[in-house]
Image (tube, rainbow, N blue to C red; front, side, top):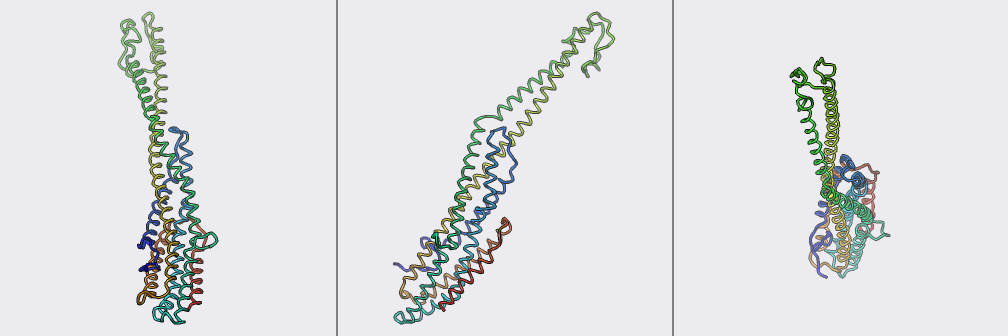
Length: 390
């Protein structure tokens, strides 16, 4: 077994990545929560474009709400508070016992009885860290196990979020292929053409509907032609034979045109409203689908990074087992150096996590109290463990 430079810090391929992993987790959380909030607040769809759109949108909003109030926010929050607890445990145990035992191992002769006792104490302290911080077995009851269980629940939720993404992307394709809006716009243009045709008929006025004004023995004045209305001519004093029937015919035709105008105007107005709604829905669908895609990607990122952190912590347990297997210091000050570098890392990580926890607290959903109690419990447990090996 080759000697590593630092067993007290979780490493992957010789690189320290736990702190950067937590930063990635925190950043993915911020984007995911923003996307979830947008989905929750999206204006509702109509069912004009697709009958399934309102239901698709409602499901996406429901899953976003579950993420924000439950497993999503809970996972990252649990990883922050869980690693806070672990880092606190390690630093307290290190300051209270590991530093002293490491110093004994570096100064005592490896063949002495005192050295063997110090080595036994050191191994017991490392075993306490492993069982408390690195064990995710179902019967462990550890902090790491609780973190893993929350991650498993988020993984289940992520399946539904991915389904939302698939459904909405499919909906966009269906809407584009159906040409619903284009068909409505064509229908609107047809109605407008019909309306223009009616207006042209009305504009022809008496010059074509009734015989020329000379046939009636009078002249239609400009005031009449500019303001023609139903019944405007009825009862007029006309003296030419046949003018009454012609005027009634003219009036009936104008009323028919007027009714057509009113009907077409209403149809055009209603269709314009429908087109506006459909265009709004199409725009909202595009935005919603984009948000769900971002949301899905960030949730998958959270799952991937959080799973990596679990693996790092389990791997750290193996590192500590390897450190415990070393029977004598391979270099001067080896044990003190290991403990010191580990203490620096875990102290810095605790500070980083505290900052994340403070930021997240502003957006956190209501939750039961217990964080302070967990931290106090970790401190008490670490001190009790350390006391036995002083």
